[in-house]
Length: 468
Image (cartoon, rainbow, N blue to C red):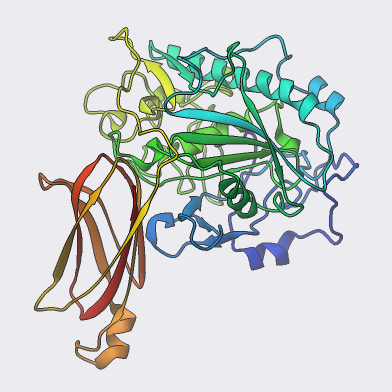
């Protein structure tokens, strides 16, 4: 997402008031839309299917309004297309091929193992049922664009003396496996619909990231994020399913790598705690595939040359380093180079890193619902739950019980609870606090853990834990 200018992320109703065009666009509008007066929506900034999070695990971003009963999903919101690019404009196959950053014969990916086992990135061509299906002609281009992504990743790793490749799902001949997915007529209307339908079709493995080339004209790109900087393999970004969507207006462009940008979001870049991070999961130290001014007031610096535009992590101090210095931010916080969805070798080792990987899916899940209460006299309530290796979603909902001074109304307006997930040795793995609703996510190794609810008010609560 490069040379994007300012992109103020606002609520849906405000955005509609400010920038909605006067006439609706068809899914395949034929005009080029080039120019300097494009609206935010024409640059892909549409918020349908997203709800600004006021608390819980999506704090600072958006809840993706997936179907009821599905695991909670979070996003940083849509990334705008570069200035002058109207994502509502239809791109023909010849335009895609001629405007591509690479030719179908110039880029390839690494053949890793049997091509299917373990954590993998699944490439997919996705098309709605009311749109012309171009899988046969687009799939070879996707294979090429995926190779370009892998080359940029490995070149980035070389800057810190290592090697790194995307663990794509590949065919027997080591070519990229491009899944062919057909959605309903509304399945491409927004990110929430897309995720809901993909899950229903079985693209929901916990050992998969799904990189979606959606043949639609809604977004430039949008992806899920985690908001966790836990430095070890239990980081939620180290599991799946996670989804990254790029629409045709931003496929394989020679001026930016949208596909790599969105995939990196699902792998945990850029966490807001990073030294040069923005609050919206990007960075400020250009040039860098993940950096841009994503909100009013964000100031960029330029410590790296413009030739670094397609590569990861300018100065390798925010989200990707194959050999971070001891005591540095990436040595003590989440480092995407350690993702199990990448095959990374650091300079001091000849073996790939990391060695910890999630259990292959599909995996059945169990929902445990617990109820309780706390009060000033009993400020903590704990529950032990045994889980298998995999993602865990915790949802804590509570209301005042009326036991505090001022009665139920007063307690309800001020109550805040904290939730911690604690390992058997007493290590606090994940924690959070907030009013009314609190949601946490973690990828836990098999074992028994303690869920601790605490607070200073008199409240009753319901804790729902979905786990493998």
